[in-house]
Length: 318
Length: 318
Image (cartoon, rainbow over all chains, first blue to last red; front, top):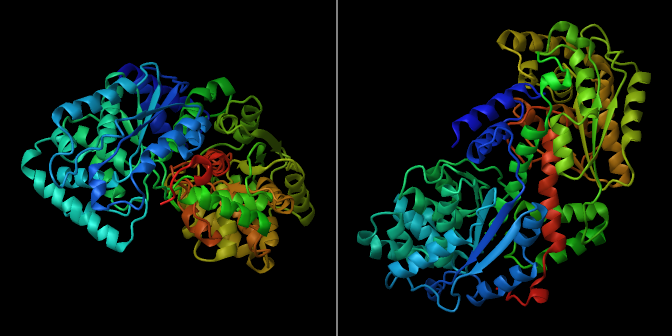
């Protein structure tokens, strides 16, 4: 972060026509954003939303309430503007890009072997990295991939320990039997790859998916480009966790957009040290919660950069 | 609410390209809004933000960290576009109106007698009622009035019981001695008028303020006009509580926009039976939290009315 910009933003915040601290978290958000963008009076004018899609061999284990062909069908829905994220990106004034990652070639079933080879992992990370528009001033990444709460749960379990049941939830809505089976699949995968996982990138290869790796690549690229990121739900946070377990500070440029209804998201946010901006019971993925949270950050920046100071407005400052 | 529209909105929601319930509270919000607007596929195209300002005789008791002249100074700031609410209303695409209510004639100090006469109360209620644009499709009301967390605390205490300390907070930021003094003032006012208060309107006259009564009048007018309302913080909710204590169902058309940092706001929201959309530590008033929450409701409506159905998109519905 740019220390001069941080100080400039904090100084401006203290002069705005409101009691000190009265805008709560909005004040912290604005100063934080200004620090990353190198401006004491920043704007958000070019947010980018990227949705990555991937397919998962582990769906052969019956871990989802939806069939795998829905991934490709939803990509077409994104391209035609019919999904939730299309509406939320438009509302936020964000550019939206969709990247379908070899949907006809699912990852391997991680209960049988690594989900991806090192070469496949690198290709997916690179796809994410390259998808970020360097001229964007805010990035939101999301995913579509039938079955992908299963690799996300496995990643969280492999990275942070605990039981598979602690990290496994209902995803798009599996029933009790489905949840039990999914939990068993996560436990099997984590046990199989335990010895091969030394860091977050190993975990991504063994247990992840192409869209999950691509989100990690995009978040890492944004760090280098000083583009602040709003994290979406459980799967996006699992991708982010792989970066954090690889390099301290890798998520300093990221906010948690929301707490989803997926059971383990709260615990995962705590592991990331992030407090969500919204908590509205969403569990859709697609970057939907993070795209809605763009509005909160925009509100913070609008107040910070648009308000009059006490001196400008001739208001007594108490 | 329009039952046919409610059913139409619920039916549409069940066909959209997402797992059932995956948009969480956004789904409930959209159906609820459609019911009030009489449409199974509603829009928000004309939100209105109204800020009412009033002055309070009880400031003579030293209950605020700011001098009373700040009320009029902030009205000028609103008119010149320099306050937080100006930025947040613009971001929400909302029309914003400001009504200063006889600022040179503060209410009476409620520790000495009723804050307003019946005639003064009616004038303020009417000002609020008349301020609502009948063509608005969403209403947010807020306030500016140095000292007005004190009447709001007194109203909550008179309406819901408990101790003055349960309802009295730091407002714009009084210190410990100020808080103790403010709590004593609230207790004195509630005790003085206890026998005169039979309903919410009596409470408004004895302990309220012009801007508080005007918010109540506007919220009541919106009920008749079927304009959904997003409630702001502690003071707005105290105004709303006066309506609820006067007529059951008076707030069925209202959402809680946010939970503020004012200590008793959570308890007041519970008395109103409302779960806030946002909780970001705001404590500014001016309708700021509710204006930010417009974006959440807009997100809900954008998804509901803009998304493709499973049939339209050719997506398998599980």
